[in-house]
Structure formats: structure tokens, C-alpha cells
Length: 91
Image 1: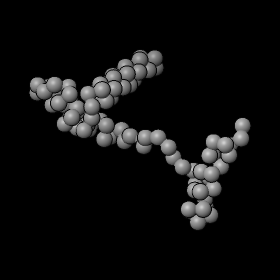
Image 2: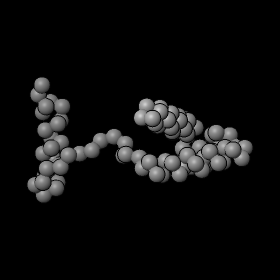
Image 3: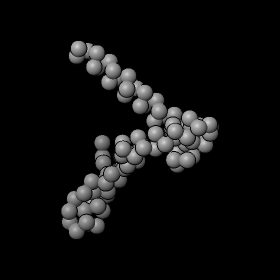
Image 4: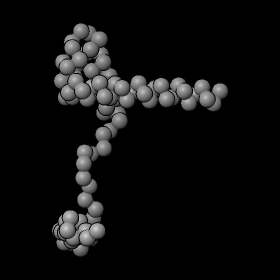
């Protein structure tokens, strides 16, 4: 595979020339989420949801979409489930 065909070499050359000769790797994709911020937003959204607004309204309150709210809620439930299973395994 010729990396020059895909622009990979150009990426490293351009990055090195812009940084004064230092080679740096370019990072692509979404930045890593801060778990503390996610937990705070999830708590805020769950509190709002308990008071009556729709899931969409609660998600918008913290700057998320309804889908993102559900995704983080599911991830939390999965982590809690995994924690309870692992704690049972070591008893």
C-alpha cells in the first residue's frame, strides 16, 4: 500500500513543518468526554425528568439530544449492572 496515495505522508510532513520540525500526530474524531461532566448532566436531566418534562425537554436542558440522553442512561445502567455482577463474583 502506497501511503502517499492516501495523503498520510503529506499529513506528517505538513504537521512537522508547521510545528517547527517536531513531528506531531494529528488527532481525529470526537474529543474524549469527561465522565464527571456526563454524570452531572445525566443527574440534572434525570432530576428534571422526575419533575415532569419530557425526555426531549430534559435532554435539551443539558444540551443533549434525546438519543444522547438515552445512550448515556443505558451506559450507566450497563456499568451498574457490570459492577453488581463483578461484586457478586468476588464474594
